Length: 385
Image 1 (cartoon, helix red, strand yellow):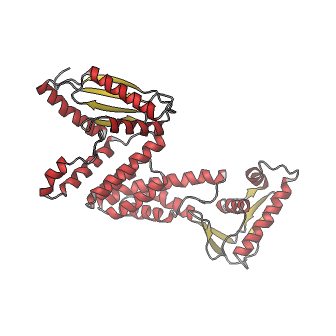
Image 2 (image 1 turned 90 degrees about the vertical axis):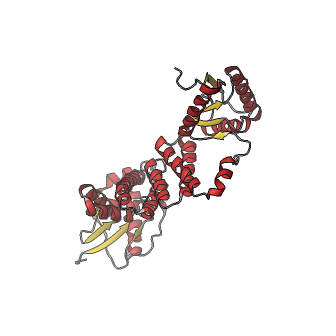
Image 3 (image 1 turned 45 degrees about the vertical axis):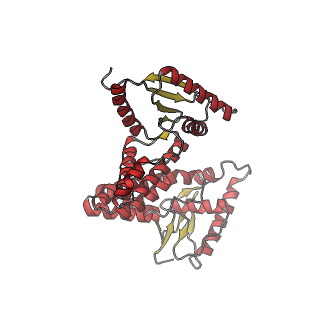
């Protein structure tokens, strides 16, 4: 071929190529071709290919296996690009792409946009970040689970998430809430545990006048974080949750306020809340104790090291909510512990209550290996040391 020809390969998401037929190949042959595409800018030695694709080859002639694979891949390229002869050339001890062919990869365009954005400022930075985000159509070679592909997949995911994070303050300043929701939603699907994307989603929903959706987003994030990692969201997320809950109530008509305040939304269950709200309830109770002299107790309940954190935590939470009184607040401390307040209970009465909780837990969940322990402290009135 005398005239330079450009072939564009898409590697972010499903493997694709411009001006070519669909790729139909076995898993190993396709991965081999993709490896050659990714490393198109250099010659690739036979030793490298043998080490990469035949580490467990039991044949006495791995070189023959490599030659058969090159024959298969060349046939694939002939099917993909009819008339484009000799796309891969054989050199002494290595293979390379025909120098008359120019390969353009979306990964290279994406990486360049990310790196250029890191050096740019203002509108140029915004434009480059938007370009980078738009180029990311999905995870790198999403159908390829080879080790070499997994390493690069993690690299491009990190670049993408960093680009999304850099976009947040820019779009926030421009009040582009819908765009923020779109970007954060895509980033959340890749790595939900990066809390900044959930926080931004909640802020955007609040700004759009949708506090109910912000509350729902928080609840989904909280439940998944507990299930996957056994931890609770930060206080910053809890504050946004409290703000969204307050805004939802402000939208209620005045004639419904008393009804809303007085209705028992959780039926006969104890009051489950965030740790921040729990602290406020305790502060109010300390003031009440100072005036009335009536005792109350704080209790920290733990599951022990043999417990299955996600499973036994849900079990303990259910027992606490069902067996405690409706006025007793409960909050989660960690993956394996809760804190609760027994209003109007002395230390002795609190021990009796927790003894019943322990008994109910092991009676209902007989096969659980959780070793429930608890610490009780009398709640001190406001001003007491």
